[in-house]
Image (cartoon, rainbow, N blue to C red; front, side, top):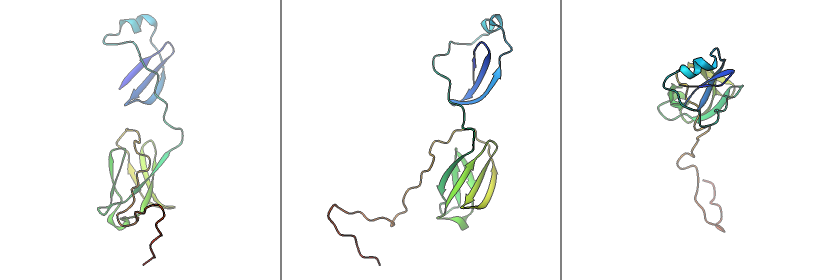
Length: 138
């Protein structure tokens, strides 16, 4: 947790994500009396988005997906399905289209690093060179 104290506000951030902006109750002499402080060198991190973010994940054979470092057990029956995960402040909402598959408590405050990492499945693509004709369907 990092606290940045300006004249009127205190900014609380963690892992370069702004968590809160609070009024500063300290005067200049109280700020000067703080120990273990250092001068701020960088800019403030961007605030989190106002509306919930959503990411997509392909459900593997074991039925578990990872979002912000947290494991969500969607279920083996959904293996191979691309699901949408709505990332909100306190929970994750997992959707298959408009059908809600589950709501999970959010225990991680990490930001989303990989918004939509969906790799092609093996066998669903064909390598070709320029000028080569497309193969006939099976």
